[in-house]
Length: 123
Image (cartoon, rainbow, N blue to C red; front, top):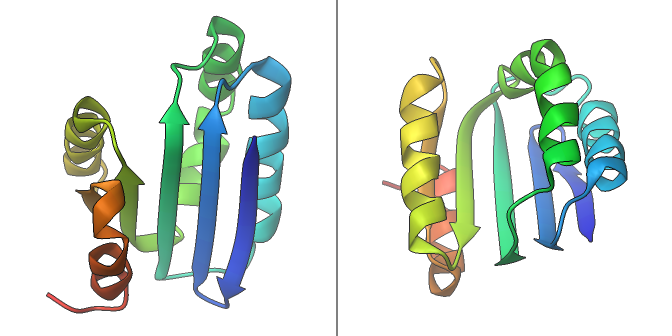
């Protein structure tokens, strides 16, 4: 299950939980692209509850759309990942280091307020 919400002209919130299969990934990516149109120098909040590793079909869909995903991520300067799994937070930090121009920081679920403050520019 997922929900993509455009909070403002420069803010997108994404929440998802559970298993992501091929069809769910297609819908998620379509919605991300549609709701992020015209965002530049934006902030992205990604909240993950009950993370399950995506299916192979979902990974295949993501890989097939890498060019559009790169265009999508360039719309954002800051991204906060809020998740309870320590290994996902570490993987997010590594991913953030590999994406030029994106300041990505991972937070535990108990740190939602800190993630919000950080996205709004607080140190």
